Amino acid sequence: MKAVIPPKSNRLVQRKIDRHVYKERHLVENFFCKLKRYRRVATRYEKNAANFLGFVLFAAIRVWLA
Image (cartoon, rainbow, N blue to C red; front, side):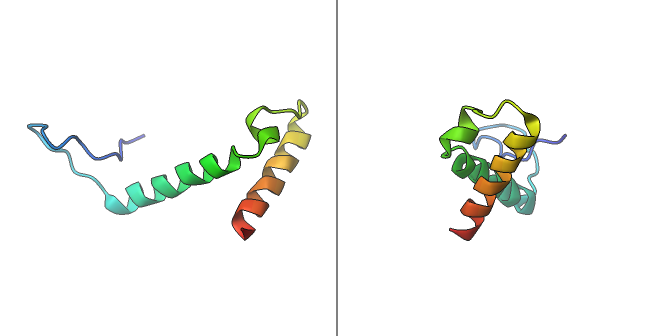
């Protein structure tokens, strides 16, 4: 793994950042935030892994279509 978040502006040695990877990371984080709006996914009502995966896929499709 490699850190893709930008360093603080007052850091003496600035590390390089790949802005394209940072944008993609931001999109993934926003997607998980939207996915957790579904209470059933956030609290994991479904204890069976197959049922949970099914509802995660259902919620992901609803987020994608909205």
